[in-house]
Length: 568
Ligand code: GLC
Ligand code: CA
Image 1 (tube, helix red, strand yellow):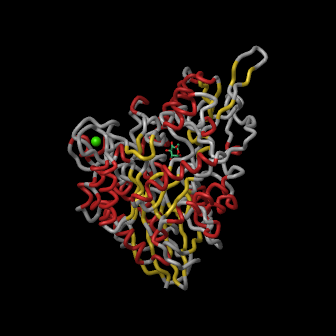
Image 2: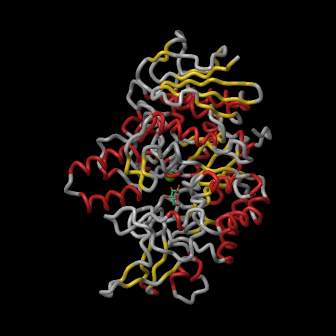
Image 3: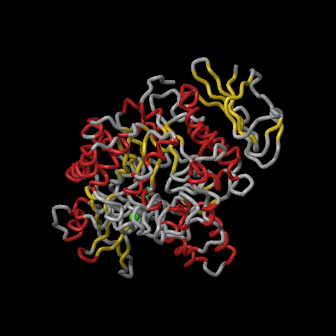
């Protein structure tokens, strides 16, 4: 494996989702001055890069992923001057700052779209994707095709002004930009990228990076869900015909001019297709997120269709993520949380009082020993958990959850069993779990805000908060900090090394070896609440480096115990 150390390969990235991070002025919404006030904290964890989720001006239908102006800051979050201070404060501490690049779509409130929708002859008409209606034999109007939106319902919205439909693969207020139009692409590069590079940012997390190029015939998608009018249509927009041409153009004309890092959210594709985006020689992006692990057990077209998973499924997911770049010139990522995922302790560990911290440390051991650039999401370092099952659907504010629930209720509202099952799945998988306010201390509103938070604080903030953990050497926070330090100390093995599972069929224990240039590491993780017998599957002499317990009896793995050994 490659030994050319590059800052973004070695980096640990900390993701901040501004609305729920830290409120500085008591209006109940997190903001940029709030972020600035915590930079020392973020640095103290051992973070090298901050990824800030969208802070651009936006009506917030999809929490900022619906941008109305790339060159302005959402007023509740702050101003351009605040962003300058954030960039400066981050750099002063030796960290870097990357932003979210949301350029598959804008908000309907963006000036570009307002002009585009105004008339069929407007010069910006072709900046979005407009199509005439289809009519059935009875003369009823229908959308141009049967594509489903990611947020439920048709992917097309009818616009009366010009009697046509526009495409929105996400919410109705998120119209897709027409990347076929060169003038549009140039405008995107200038407004969304160059503007911020000139201000000194260090790169981008690229939202929905595989979706810009659509199959231009816009055909009906095959029927996968027979009881729905709208069908999954990935194959007509995911890795579309011109996608690599677009990425190459963006890289050559803008990104390559700066010392940056880029990480794409590309979604599900076969390995060969994914590699085309991140192979170094392709000159497109540095790395991408693979969703194998976070989506384990869910239907890839619909996360709320969930059947559970076995530890072996999870191992396969980790294996795929790790072997993805082996033998190539590409680079990979490690992440188990972000703003679109539930909390990892609830999802993959055990969030009971008894095992919450220990299983959180187990997951920290796993992540800090896997190769690739490591991403940590706000609150993950203190082990924030999902929202409780007792909360009603009214506490859920994410457009994805709300639309899904409404559509489901319209179909199955009378079926209590189905509705209960859906609520179970929402309690496990909704994006809202990542979006509750960060728990800073045990004061009112968890120290997130002196006003009423825009979203309810998780009930467990008195037990789980930053203040109680930063000074406690046995806390999850301290364990993460120590694990990140060890990750850097053994970076050849842990960040760059190869990965091999030793117990593929074992449903309770996860054992793997990392290897690099003659050095080997042995990692063993007990994923159950049982005590299990420890067996050395390698046979070499093991020397303990790091563990989430004080290992007294090496022959037994206590519940959720994990160990990292060097093989001598
Ligand atoms: C990405 C973002 C998600 C957003 C969507 C639409 O998947 O991570 O939060 O809803 O794109 O922009
Ligand atoms: Ca605020």
